Image (tube, rainbow, N blue to C red):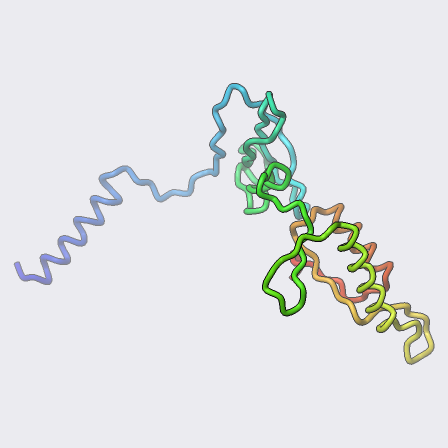
Length: 188
């Protein structure tokens, strides 16, 4: 037996052992959520609020503190059959995240430091900048003399971190300002 034949035979033997002798099946398997085995947690089914697909969730809630401790895909739900996207899998962290920032942080232009500001300061500043930009770029009538009432100086690219109802309210607000350039991450 030559060296090349020995290597071929060894490769075939290793592949046969790895895939044939160990009971590994390469057939597709059905997704199943691994249910949290806690007797003290209340299990509730719910629907994910993101993207309008309507994936089913199983939410485990601590019966003592009433906080969500785990969220998993519902294996009995006909849409997602136990699987979840990254947003759905981390949905519990929106409300139950102790590290979530609760203050407004502002970084001035050309600065490398963040400053804590009040919510009133931030909302006033945002409102003033939107008003100034809208006033500077507002078009009441087009070249044909037709009333268009649009703002060409502001555009919006929405985030999939908002749920459907929040997206609707957000785009209604933007349209009331006269924005034409309204886009969303999910459509892009």
